[in-house]
Amino acid sequence: MLSAFTNCFKIPELRQRIILTLGLIFIARVGAGIPLPGVDPAPLQAYYASASSDGGGLAGLYNMFTGGAMVNGAVFALGIMPYISASIILQLMGAVMPSLARLMQEGDSGRQKIAQYTRYLTIAIALIQGTMITYALVYSPETMFTGFDKGQFGAIIVAGNIPVFFIVSVILLTTGCMILTWLGEQITQRGIGNGVSIIITVGIIESLPGAAAQAYQLVFNRAVGAESASMGVPQAVLMLVFLCVVTASIIMILQAVRKVPVQYAKRVVGRKIMGGQSSYLPLKVNYAGVMPIIFASALLLFPQQIFGQFSIGWYNVVYGTLIFAFSYFWVSIMFKPLQISDELKRNGGYIPGVRPGEPTARFLDYVMTRLTFAGAVFLVVIAVIPNLLMSYLGIPPKIANFFGGTGALIAVGVSLDTMRQLETYLLQRHYDGFLKKGRIRGRSVGQTRQILDTSEIKNLWALWTPLLLIFFIGLAAWVIRKWA
Image 1 (cartoon, one colour):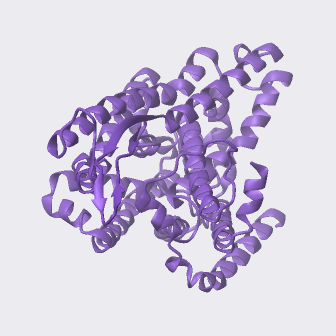
Image 2 (cartoon, one colour):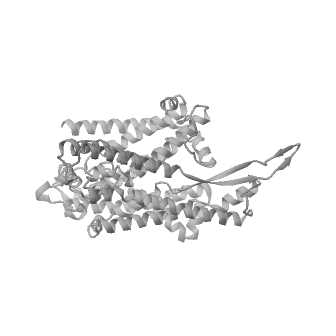
């Protein structure tokens, strides 16, 4: 596997994509550390530290999705969630509006139009959420940050002119969200992996060192949380084994497929007999991947004051229901059994025991419906594991989130997806993949062609001038804030 990572930098195109991706990720991390003008991040940091140790998971969940930007009161505090919310709304509207559904099926031109609508809707949602956050920071922090006490943690706002601060903060938060959206689009088009998912994953991984330090204190110093939450070395070893089992289970379910046999009829082409061989159609058990988790989390994050009325039990019920529903919703949009059936029929393929055409489409839909049920149940179980660990074992949220849940599912799923793309490049250039035997299951042919299309990176170096400019501005801001 180490040699495969080394080979990634031997392919010029892949090397450029990796470097660009790392540069854009760095910009996202710099923006997560630059506070809004007039905001003192110290009270927020104290609040999140208290919420993390006492079990307040919602504040930590949103901070995890923003990559620590919320705890810093940063310009990227909205994260990329408004963009995800806009995508959800447009997908739902496409299911009920025929004109929008036709636009989604018009190829590249339709996708560009949908992307434009998504950006417009993202701006509107970012303005609303930015206004909510700014209002909470100025007038009532306890409505957005449950349990926040100004007398205990101090004043968040140190600006003198509140109206100017309000307007500037909303504009900066909205701009930060759109910058993150642009960074995600650039990573998707010119980098490696899905940009939005990678930005979220990097934010999740950012909390890993803090979780490791807290786990060390929990085991050896017994200084975190209540005394009942302390554990010795044997319990820590069991938890580590449990972490490995959960991670392996996530990988297994994300990679699992149902192989539907496909037989191709023999055809005479000139003097050659074509076809006659057997193959299979891989149907993924978890076809939706981590998207139901991301969608459900995006819907549950705002407004936070609503969640104060739910107990942890009701939160798990609502969260699990949304994940289950979004699993079927995503499959209904992305999986096209009729199109697959027509493609098989044109190529002379058929499923043994099933008539070609519409019966094949019904059979594929039948199989995928049952596979989706199994995948959705697994997603729900994994998603609620951290809440169970926090409720019954007293594990701090920062540690529990890595034993399953949103963080683990997104991090593992996006890592596998990125490795698939890297392996596609390596195999295309006749290098070995990440596994000596077998391979990480790749994408469809259409997606592979899109990945290997080099037309999008002809003007790649034109991005480096603004990239370096933003890099040095962010670096200077970080140095000034660090040493001022």
